[in-house]
Image 1: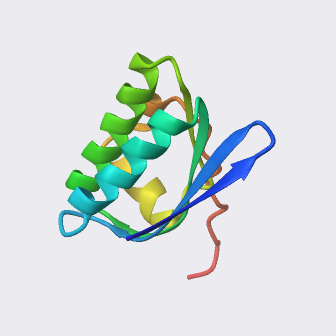
Image 2: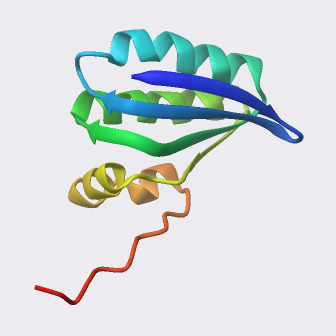
Length: 109
């Protein structure tokens, strides 16, 4: 899991890439929680997530709750297909409250 933080005019963006799963949530947790502490307005760019499991989902929920408790804005954006699949499977889109763009499904096959 790789986390790259960039500063924007109206906040910051953390680009997450790789696998967000049980093998890396401990190391990703520190970076993500630190980003929430440092930036009152933050986006998590999820376009680079290849794999997301229950541990990764729990970390995203924790981050959303922590930001809310601190009255910081945290938006999840650019959901990868792996993220969309898990959000749909566990019906969690409403928990996060961020718009998801679902790619059109092909009629082929």
